[in-house]
Length: 111
Length: 115
Image 1: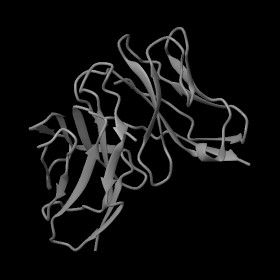
Image 2: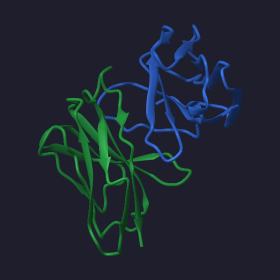
Image 3: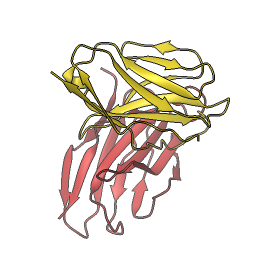
């Protein structure tokens, strides 16, 4: 699986959009970008994933650059409950695979 | 309400005792997984099961055992042979193992402390 790089921490004001970047310059053509988050002492929560097109669901939007070397997770109206560690993972959905979380970005939403 | 449940949320055990962690899902998922997470660490795969009555070892299976007698249940037993069992244990499931339907969804976790 391709390696990802994320900033260790970010802050965002409540009600504003939170934009979390992820670099994955060595991504291969069949690897998807997945985003999870983990609120303290809870299980990881799946957010969204995509291959090359931008994706949106009820939680977030995922913007993948045309060259697929980076992506941005957007939480459109951040709330205090969005404070968590966010993980960007790049993987091929093939076979039963372990999920490998990097260090992630600790996002703090401030009132 | 569909989801994955793990029980108990907190578990204390004395050294030398075996303990079984429960994981149940009503999502009709074929694949189930057990991970361990230590403070400040990532996830490590213990066991996974792609289908009923079948399971495979992950990266750190020593000292653990599982069974998959029913599609919705994948209990994990932490045996006395596990050297450092104190950790946060996470169960996950996916529609299938492999392909675009393998997105893993996690339960709330069980925090095991060995006294």
